[in-house]
Length: 105
Length: 119
Image (cartoon, rainbow over all chains, first blue to last red; front, side, top):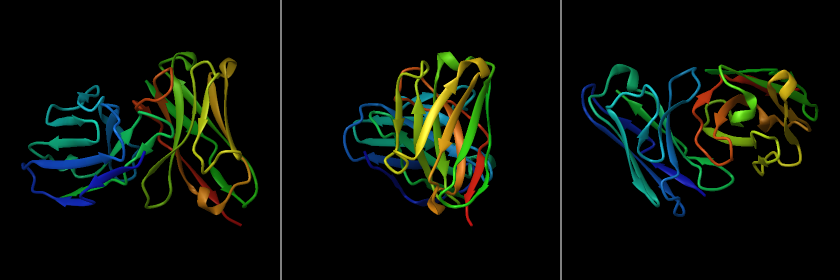
């Protein structure tokens, strides 16, 4: 299953809203996760099951979608939110990631 | 709760290396473990999975036949045995915790260990 993220990079002002997209090449139900990766750090789980926030993830992060189209929305962008974001499907083997969206100031 | 990897280093092409992954704050036999790698400046690539009981193992096509996952309950450690290494295997390798049965998201990640395949 090929995961395609758009856009590859997104420039947004602090305090604004960012919308990141992820498309699956075939239906994956809601078996989708989102991760954040800051420079030099391991990825961190943000969202699983398309819309469930992981432990300790702020409410400004939200996920939506099902089937083939998914969205990660970040409201009131904070300085620490500017990072790389990846989607990942776990509907079938092999597990696959999107190529990432870089969120820039 | 955390996951700690070790074992990375510089290895010539064609040689082998073994990475280790140990859980802290939870038991090896209640979760599945995945290996995910990230080549320099590139995205994330899932590599391998071992189920909580060791009875199910899955591999990416890019490593099938060369990499093997295993687990040692007595040491509370899971391993990624890498053989016939190629320059394109150069990456940071992350161990990540998944759900016990198989396909899942990864809720805890290690800090990563760098493997460099070079002569």
